[in-house]
Length: 187
Image (cartoon, rainbow, N blue to C red; front, side, top):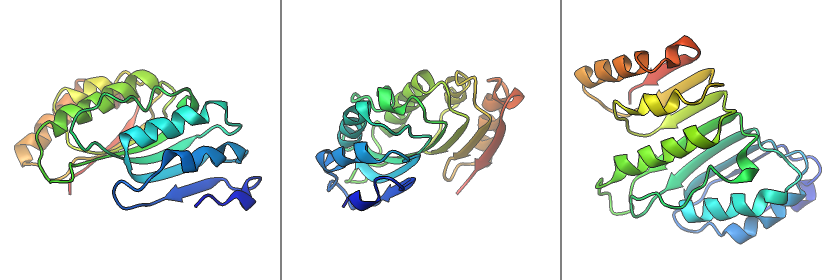
């Protein structure tokens, strides 16, 4: 699964999978990739993501761009991913938080907020942030903690017109507009 023969030249790696087939131990060889700057992981369970990034503590590369689709099967977020030392150089993050396998939404927004708080508190060097998740009015306050942020794209899904107005107002009140380009996208 890992293209080891490209360890000296690979700059971007992207892994797409169906649910629950990632094995974090398969990613240990990523330490060899000296020029890896972009990593994309789709449909990865949060526990596996944590293990991958914890195992990468001694890696010779420094990720600058991370695209990650986290699967939180129980709608709780207790396993920290973004506090891992190996992610401190990330400057661009595209974050998706997927729904539970059974399709229920209980606790989904609380889990999203916990992930967002961790990103805001841990990745202080972020310049670009793309969020593909739900929203709450207080969330822009968390994002405003990222002082280096220059670009925010937030894909919030389908919302009512009055909710879109409230979201825009909460962004305006959070000081983000003063230093970042913001794009809200409604599906």
